[in-house]
Length: 413
Ligand code: HAM
Image (cartoon, rainbow, N blue to C red; front, side, top):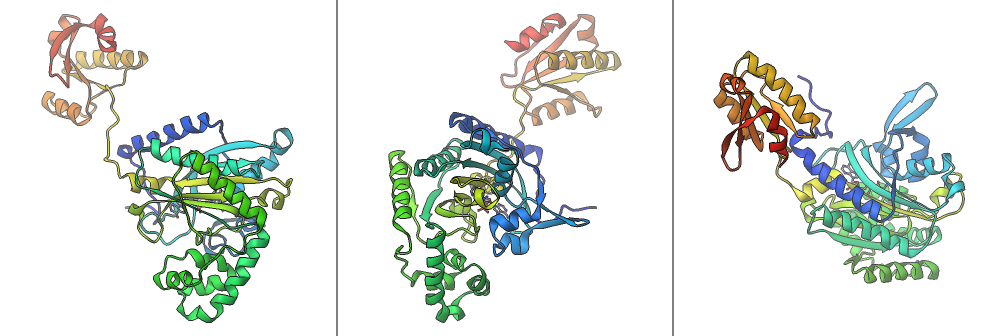
């Protein structure tokens, strides 16, 4: 028998109501905040990600699913931000209304070592606001993420924020780190020894115990942040305070993608475990639009990992059979009448189903119970002779005879 590819999941019917709950809450909230949906393709020119995330980013180095087509190399998208900026520019959105507020949902692909909360195919629920440098937008985006979590019924998370400063500030921090970590390389984990060469900022948010010890002894003062960036961050915090959003400033939060500058943030949850505790994350990417050939404009966004929200929420599987009417027939003539009723009920907007497996009356009643049907409609010879059905209310247990012509009216009450 075939097995699913490691790091992928089957989202089974019992889980779908949870996905719908989060997606519906998000759509409502995005619309309240005046965001519009965008659906870019799942495959892109691989160079888009190399350019946006940075050649040294772990995703680009080792996690991209690549598809070769003659000279072209496509990537299954590992994230949404780069695709959305590409779509924004390619479709000239910058020419019609340069300020846009967008949201998206869908599958992302990264060739990771699979473990709890770390998949090879996972789903993002994200937003990107392109066209503004204003710190109030950063606060809006964080408050939007916060609202999705609270209205999605997810509790117990924390918000961490930091500022990376501008590109110049990041360079300065990198060179400071280079000097202070050079003598401590032996105390860093293997991955951080590579990061030291390729992407030294990532050493700061490594989860490994010994790296944490080294990092906490560095006493980061934030002195590499220039005045404009410090002021921007102050205004982000003030806006969050006025929105009454709880957050922690975390000077070690850096994020792994090259495009980030200034504000970065994460929503973390204890159920996810110490290795990857982020339900979602985001930040500013004020240089990306220009780097991809567009105008010089600021942008900020975030993405939640749906599967991580699921771990944090841990819902019970449910059968979504709200007021399902289950039809049980006895005999061939009744079966024909049952098919007509099924169609009539569904046309009237009433969810209906029947037994297609030849169950006995007892077995079919058990099935109706398992499906959590609201009503059972029984048709046998007796009912056919009277042009009626027997209707059982499954929650009260009450059973009565109803004329065939009145059944829709009766069920709609
Ligand atoms: P990211 O931190 O790489 O950011 O991913 C966002 C979220 O996706 C993570 O916090 C996590 O919940 C989830 N996630 C990431 N990788 C996996 C995985 N292998 N398995 C399961 N879940 C995962 C971005 O992708 C940015 N594009 C976010 C952003 C939008 N920044 C600005 N705008």
